[in-house]
Structures are given as C-alpha cells and as structure tokens.
Length: 165
Image 1 (tube, one colour):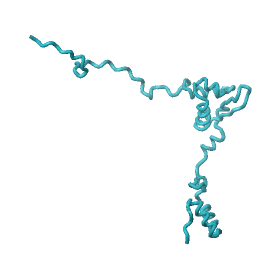
Image 2 (image 1 turned 180 degrees about the vertical axis):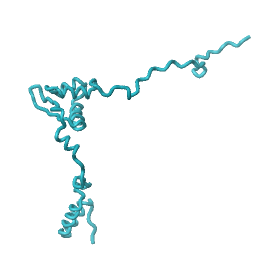
Image 3 (image 1 turned 90 degrees about the vertical axis):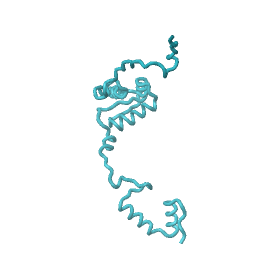
Image 4 (image 1 turned 90 degrees about the horizontal axis):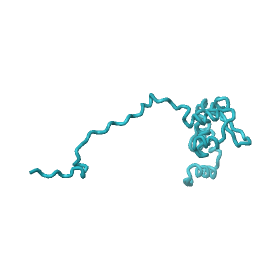
C-alpha cells in the first residue's frame, strides 16, 4: 500500500520548481536611441520662444504642465544661463511675452563665457581681493592707527577683544 501524497503546493518551499517564463524584451541601448528630439518639454518651450509671437508664462505652463516658478527657473537657468540664448521679454496686452531674439547668445552670457578669473577677482573670506597691493594697503592703514584703533580693528577681524599688554 502506498502512502497518500501530501499537499506539496501549500508550502512554497515544497513546490516543485518550474521553468522560468520567457524574459521580457529589454529597451534598446541608450546609444541607439535618438537624442532629445522635438517632443521633449525643453525643445517644445524653446520652439515656442523662437516664434515671432513668443510665449507667455501661462502658455508654457499649459504646454508643459509645470508650475509658474518652474517655468521662470527654466527661462533663467536653462535658456539664459546654460544655453546662453538672448531671451527678451516685453509687456503686451496679453501679459509679459518672452521670445528668443535672433538665436544669438546674450551679451551677459558671452561675458560669463569669456571671463577668466584672475588674481583681482578671487575673493577671500572677508571680501577683499588677496593681492600684494591690498595687503600692503592694509599694513599701511594699520600703521596709521593708534592703540584704540588697533584694538577696534582686532575686535572686528577676530570677533573677540584684543589681548592686553
């Protein structure tokens, strides 16, 4: 006589293993995908701004489903700063209309791109340029101070009272 078969299916650890289902198709690798095309939100906004009529913040909000602060941030951060496009705005009866003028970079963007930091533009923590002449000027200024002036300067620089002599 044979033993009755127990219910192996009730415990997941006792179930017999079955073949795995066929794997799903994977998306194409990133290199074969087209780059950001005209159906991205950024491309749509830039296309709207390039039209002669331009675009208001409200129309961009409708087209992208973004909030007002996001549209303003995109205009300032991406269009003006990152892309360096000449974004102009004017007040009309429809409200403020933004458009990209001539597709050229704005003068402010060109200045940012062409500017190279030199010794005079580098700032220290206290806001003064760290150059030889500024240090010499500070020394000359300190030499002209009396004891009370030196104590006052010490306190403003080190945020504590000057040591006594």
